[in-house]
Amino acid sequence: MAHHQRSTQGFTLTELLVTLAIAGILAMIGAPAMGSLLARTQDANTEASIADSLRHARTAAVMDNARVLVCPSNDGVHCHAGDDWQHGWIVARDADHDGQPDATAPIIATQSAMPAGIRMITSEGRSRITFQPSGSAGGSNVTFTICHANARAGKSVIVANSGRVRLAGAEPARLQVCLAGLR
Image (cartoon, rainbow, N blue to C red; front, side):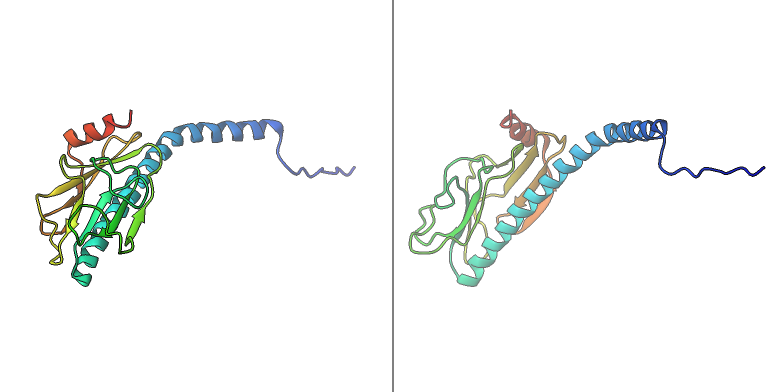
């Protein structure tokens, strides 16, 4: 007597439910890590954006033999006072030393607002950075502190009065001030 074996294709309902349960557990374990990864990536992007803008401004000042400022801006045209940069910033010439972009010269670069949950502030009393034709930034060092609502650590971009831009971890006291503005 010949037995005919029936070939089966596909999965049983039990196998499918077990696979879905394992996938769900893995997703629950990985979700917090993914959120933290996204926060770190957004912080790194903001850090790179401001560092690139500052380096670009310094280069423009030296190449054009002109004063170039970097300042926070809500409209992409005018500088606004204060140490909060989360609404964006501009890079522009400032030949008349008034702390605002020259009306006769085009804006060199703009940066739009940062994503929700990210904030960037500068050192107290340093609402703008002006690069001289020599490449120096004048005044004291300025620190940009970048914080994210979902991250425990922040980033800093520091501009020395020589004009050199460097990256560092955020100082805890400034990080707390930055985070307080997110709430």
